[in-house]
Image (cartoon, rainbow, N blue to C red; front, side, top):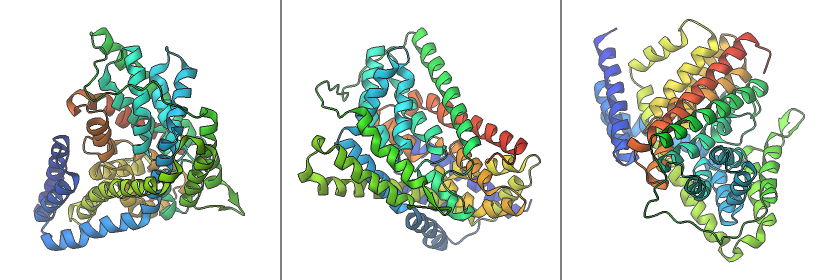
Length: 439
């Protein structure tokens, strides 16, 4: 390996470590992304101005252009489910159906159902958090496991399952020419494995913590509401179910509605069906708030995608990619590894896929990989290393929403959002390799 390539590789690793440590300490994602991009540029002999003005901003704005409407409609869906208490009604219904013995598992399951219905993972977490707080208090579960329960439900099995109207499931369609249901059978099997394995891990971790004397300890900002009015949980589910149907319905082999259109129509259905639980005079205000929130969410992702774009321009990156695509073993294992590594560098599943799908997809297709199998493998594997401590969603839920520290809460999050999707990726790779027609 040439000295410049070696230095460039060291710079990439150093920048990634600095980014993770800085974000864990609360440094703003935009500040640290630009700083770490500068480290990568300087150690790769790339002009600093060219790297930031060219590579960084090109990655930033390209991802914004391609995915803003998905973020916007998902956030609007989340906002209307929030203001009508629809999301809370679904969560509360599921908790009540499961009962006290399975209350712990009801939280990620509620998050998963809401996220699979098209609500953005950020909004789903914020909606279910008050319910989780009540469940953990009543069951005396240690509070530090709430971020793990929320992120497990929102960003693993529900995010990567076939048919999901989440951006992670949509990004590969652009490059691979697939649809949201690509790799249906294996996809659902892998998602089910993630759900079961993660649930077992969560229960064992909480049981061990309780055996060690940990209990629920409320924080000063915790609010427990008992007099809120909720719509019927089944009625609140109807728009989400119809959204899934609309975006996956095909006519002459083509999707009847684009993803963004289907999710937006689903939002309108929420407003119609749950109308009496909202203040119609504030609809424009709520739409404005959702729009601002969607800009913040996608900009946070764009910040790390920009960092990934700078990394992609270095002399070391082709060496990294070459090593991944030429690794021995099944072709889908190589695709999974490449995707999860890039997602880890970006600190974002959608951001990582935004780079990995157009970069790696054509290479594997030319080597005989099935587009549908590749879509599902890359989608599932993107949900593993993306959940490292510098992931914007992890930071938001752990520190911002739950007000827990990474020191107390991140290890359970790691087991549920890194390890379990990795296991799901292995399942997908094995099944697609052994049964190539099972797509």
